[in-house]
Amino acid sequence: MRKTSSLFWGIALILFSAVLLADRVGYIHFSTLSNNAWVYIFGGAAILFLLGWFVNGLRHWGLLFPAFIFAALSLTIWMATRNYTGAYLGAPILAAVAMPFYVGFVVRRHWGLLIPAWIMTILTVITLMADQVVGNLIGALFLLSAALPFLLVFLANRARTWALIPAWTLFVLGLVTLFADRVNGNLVGSLFLFAIALPFLVVFLLNRSRRWALIPAAVLAILGTFPLLSLVFSGDAAGAFAMFLFALPFFVVYFRWKEGWWALIPAGIFASIGVVVVCSMFVPKNQLIWNGILTGVLLLGMGVTFGLLWLRRASLPTEWALYPAVGLLVASLLAFVLGQNFQDYWAFILLAVGILLIVTSLIPKKPGEPTPPANLS
Image (cartoon, rainbow, N blue to C red; front, side, top):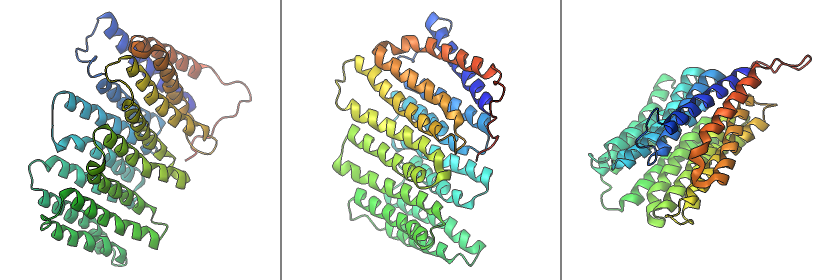
């Protein structure tokens, strides 16, 4: 597995650097690269993590969180730079969080994963409809749809009476939402989402083995906080706070359960983006030199994330994390040193690192060197 991962990351870096070099010398032209660099960067990162998922094994479905999140960020930035406006701009991120849970269910056949997947899917659909449907109807649709999987769980096994609590609560809240037109919309939305989160928390507190319930509880509680942000924060501050809120439940999963090591990846990505947004609030907007520094901060945060996973390789299947950690940390250092000229040189660095990784993967092991176990998961 170690040699396969090394070979994969080496080839990936070489291909990525080749594309950048070809653009530099004029063989290919990305006409919008200067204005939409992050569209290509996040898109390329998504492809790398998607391929990394195949290389490292389909059971490591946690790698799909950064793959889909990066792809969603790329799509969202692309739409924003082309003056697309509307609530639907938030749909890609919500869908990106939902899809790995579906894959996790297919891989592990854990029914609990379908609940957060379904919740995030509902939120995605509602976000797409938000500009065309009356607000009260959207809220009612979400609540009534969220009640459905719990009702099905109970009907499939009448011993699961706990499922009736969230099913009934959501159904009642859905009906009430239809008439909630006399209260501030942001406040109503927050209270309803908090109310939906509460039954999931109760399910966990009644039976601590039902840890899956913490995921929808945290997601819904965080989403319930968003409408209140507009009453307290504005602009970049609200965006940064939202990124930290997205990171929080993943950090909880990572620190609480050993098998939840994968959660550090989306937690680190969201937290790194949040830190960059905070930093951007305190730097001059018209000085290009800060672009390289902010890029360095983002890459540093992501590199540290994978570095922490690699440090736990003795007890977890995370030896592969060395390669993205080293690549991101080196790129971060270069961004700090080169500043706004970072994009002029990083293609050569990626090419050198890619060649180094391939050479390293092809070097035969020394006699007596222990062979790592094939599967630590």
